[in-house]
View (cartoon, rainbow, N blue to C red):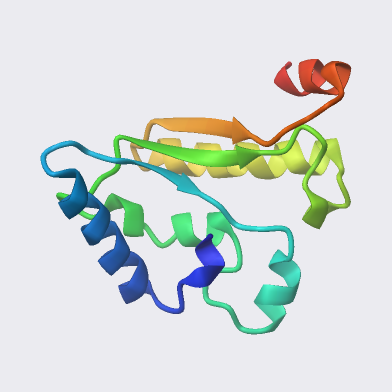
Length: 124
């Protein structure tokens, strides 16, 4: 999760290690924020959310680009946004747009959702 990093240097070092471990293949990455973003922001966390980390352009460093950046999807709505489907979709769209502008291929990974109608609605 983004909040585990205490500095941009830490993010860049981790990205470098991932690339070194993958050799000549560009790795894919799952960029997570968490449900308690507001509390982390108040506590002074430099990266309280996935979007805050992505906005640093740390994932864009030459020679260390990721082949795909995945973001968390929330068919039941994001807990940090009071499970609001509209607010959750708007936030996800803004992160996807930012990453696409930066030249990344973007995917979305959704957690479990046990309501098939809710999942179908979310997919649309």
